[in-house]
Length: 328
Image (cartoon, rainbow, N blue to C red; front, top):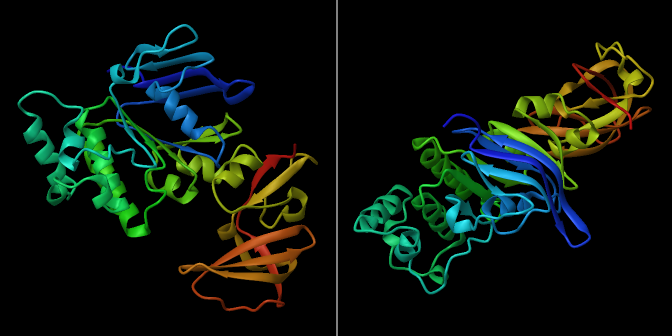
């Protein structure tokens, strides 16, 4: 189809006097994976539930495949939206087997073959006769994914589907999702609070905070060029110092007194004209992070490998780059 598969315009949702979403604009194109990244309570689940048709909107509109499905005067029911939803809490029916759960959205003589094929592709064919209480968390989430795929949706809605999975299961589920989604070029909206996950898998990221969109862009754009301090902190570790403190090292070109410099840990380097003292050390496996106490404030610096310095050491430091944001 031409145009976005999902289009939200000035979308607002309120629960009584509480506004959960405020004037959200978001497009999702065919084949695109858009991560909605934000902290708990930012409105991520509310956005997905509004798109799915589980809750009404209080303002604006939602279009799916060119059709208005929600606005202030109408709401198309979830069963008529052709979206595939994968919930954080699995939401499996306790009385149905795996095969019956996946077959639920299907009808006709082909349903058995479709179910068998999906279970085989997701590596859970041997679980077809089991019920949810007989499955692990990772197995339940695969069943939830299979049920969503069986609908042949125009859009996947994924509400923190890996939140309760360990790292190997999380990686396997994301690979399964990507393989199935790309086979039909189906777009997805993926809600998460995990910045590293969003940066790794998204085509674009929508940063959500306090029910409002802060920034939308590619992973590189939102990480390296955040529009403000909220955006910087939503997308990963960041130190903030007055821009004048790092100007000329090689530093940013300071254009005004009301600017701060965002410093990612990997942009800060040992050796340079600035002074500091190592206050804390954090070993992260592939790298070590040092929190420096400096005249400009606390600064986080990262180096590859294990720690080579000690708490209390004096350290001269500088920056490879910095990103300026207006002080508000």
